[in-house]
Length: 302
Image (cartoon, rainbow, N blue to C red):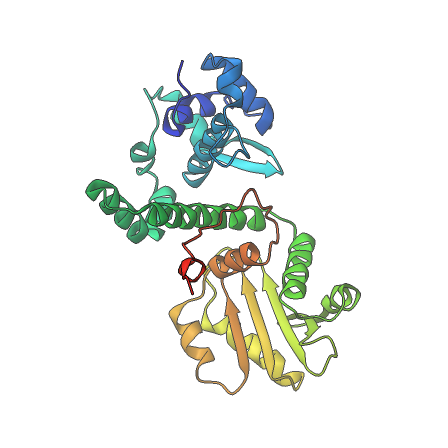
């Protein structure tokens, strides 16, 4: 039979987790390929990039959408299980699950709203059939990046405090801060000075220091938390700070940092994920495409 689309995979994927146990993604893919009666060629048929089987990729997308609706959850790298919400849904014996069906869940709706403008643009181009080949690549790239950033943020929120500290160190080093890994590793998470989680060099020579607060926050971070952080900077006679969170900042928080003399940078969860992609933290390159144009100078005859 033809390789099923990712929406057709959603319900069978959720049903394969009905036992409430942890499942390894590779085992689930194998189970689903048998359920859909894929032959050997269909199992290994690759994406145009040649880097991943089409069916594996579609199972991955189905899993991502179910996670956004909180019907399943990641437990550790490569493993996931059904949630109570997912179990409750299966009790109702739905005929199928697709993206439209998932819109009944607020968390999935919020996820879709975050990308609503891009989705509308993509749908408009698709209906009008006016995308150039280069536009198709660019729209596809930004959609992949958008979904990757959300998945990165999910993994980051589920990490331990110690791992999150390491993640922040790795990112700041890749961005050119912190001097050496040895210096950075000693600095962060060691000061324990209320509101400050660490101190890191601004440059390799250590000409200035940056004070850091890095928290896997659940709710939004308001101006009160930022004021406390700035108060800690004052106590340390410091002028520069970075506040990193896996959640978001309130409007008051953003407005507050524009009224103070201290240089404080706020990095929310979305920006953190974008930096991780840009600096290759927690991601691996699958493939790369080059877009070339005619070099008219080459064809100019003297």
